[in-house]
Length: 286
Image (cartoon, rainbow, N blue to C red; front, side, top):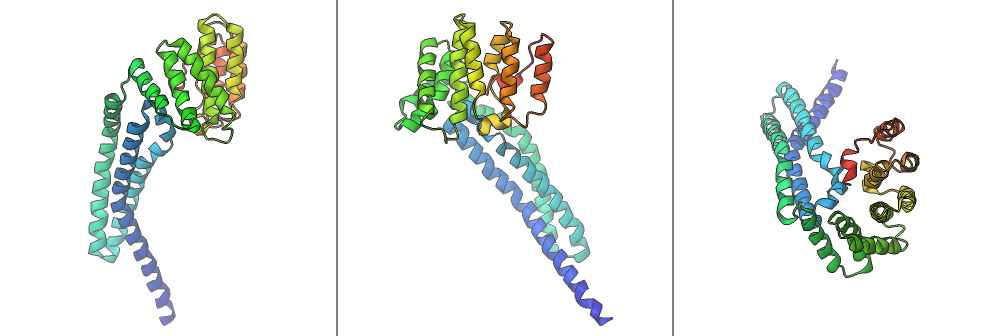
């Protein structure tokens, strides 16, 4: 009978360790979320609206941490009642309460992020172009210029500065060959060709625009493109001109890097084959 006592004590000790770890995690999770929001806020202030997509995957971390904090806090409360460790009970109780409050704050968080954007980085095309041009102006190294040209080309086109957009996109594609291993290479290949393609559409050079679209589809992808998908602005321009076959070919090219598209490429392909222009949503912005 005495032989059975050590396993019982060991079981209680293991349960006690788990309870303490769970309560500690529950208490610390909101502070980790606060740190992440400071990181997001700094990134937006530093890079503006056009680079928010790079944090898309990380943006889910705060909610996951809070949910896990609540779950572990509740688990600790259930277990601690059996063991009557008042310190752990208090820690878990406080952790659960703070995590519940944090969920409410997470719902308000995007509002404050929008305020951050509307302040330092105006949402108007002219404001975004000024920000992009300023980054291009202060670019010291060739690599800095490689990064800055991407936004400058896109924002110039949106603002109607066609010649500036053409010049920046051409230089961007020229520099890209020096940065094949760079994380931004896939973005540069896509964005440079999309800008030149949209200029071609605006000038009535549809055949050139079709070639630019296919060249954009030959991008090897990027952290942003792999997660959120390619930009469909040129595809939409060409669909409005009736160029369905080229757009369908572009969709197929995009499959090689956008493997987590949640069947969007299939749905868009069906719409195009049915003679419709898909609702590309946020993929007109990325």
